[in-house]
Length: 156
Image (cartoon, rainbow, N blue to C red; front, side, top):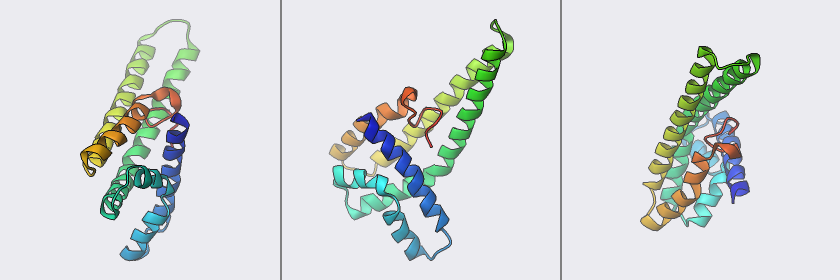
């Protein structure tokens, strides 16, 4: 299951990138590109049996979330690099290392919160059964930083 979710997250990044490259086209073209260039959302559409309207709204939410995701990725990478540098350069817990540990945890928590907010917004587009299945699948991934998933340092 985690392998599929990792593929979903990676495909989401590729699909969103493909969409943004074509951004300058007309609105009708953009909608078609959005739906055609986000195969990672096919899981959402097929498994949850989304209507065209639900799928279009979920796709738009994913595109809108992408800039937040990119900022969170960058923040996590920077916090992790700082923490690793400080941890490797000393032989004791310094005030700087303590601050880096706290900052690293704060950034991860902020990312998890933003991802959960995004997941809940997406779930709000769905009926109760669809939302329950979606959240059952996605929430553990959003909270598990060990898989390189959404909350992890290498999720793009």
